[in-house]
Image (cartoon, rainbow, N blue to C red; front, side, top):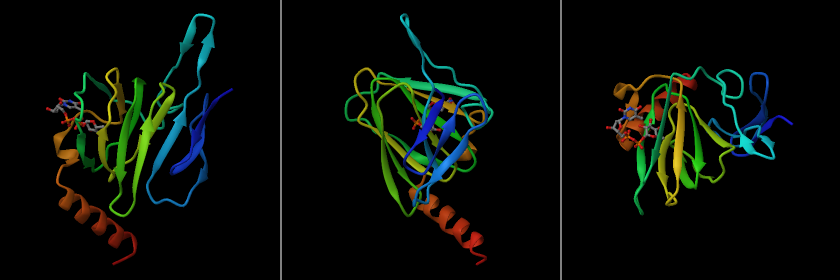
Amino acid sequence: MIGKIHPIGLYGCCGSGPIQPIRRMEVKMDIRIYDFEEHGDERGILISLEQMKNIPFEIQRCYYMYNTQPGVRRGFHAHKSLEQILVCVSGSCKILLDDGETKETVVLDRPNKGLYLSHYIWREMFDFSDDAVLMVLASKLYDESDYIRSYDEFLQFVQQQRGEENGQ
Ligand code: T46
């Protein structure tokens, strides 16, 4: 059984080959939820994440956050070009996503569930459980100049981008 991608934006399949979206829903954000394949036996479960296989980009960085204090919200930014996959490998947390027009909240509550985010998506992480460990795979090395940390600036960016796409 190979992994699956589930609802929000793009849903598709992941397994031994490159990920192919199988369904696009009526949302504008490029968000995908992946169900990673679990290799389970009597010893437990193992999940393997491989670039350009079940991760749709070349992985240049991995980071994770834990010991997040009660009531904390993190994030409050978008990226200009970074692609990422977020996996809550322990516990749970919520991610608010905003493309400047639409807002969605995704619950990450199992270690085989991955949230893919492309660029120009504002994100806020909150409701971390005590045992939450949020791991992120990223397509690029850390670069502060890729961040948009002002919400007003983010809205200007996306409006400008949509204008260019519409030939304005
Ligand atoms: C994102 C969300 C989901 C580094 O030195 N290297 C790194 O690779 C990262 C990610 C951060 N840092 C430093 C920069 C700050 O001094 O660690 C500190 C905390 O980073 P930040 O406040 O950006 O963390 P979050 O939780 O707000 O956001 C992070 C990522 O930065 C961001 O890309 O999409 O997680």
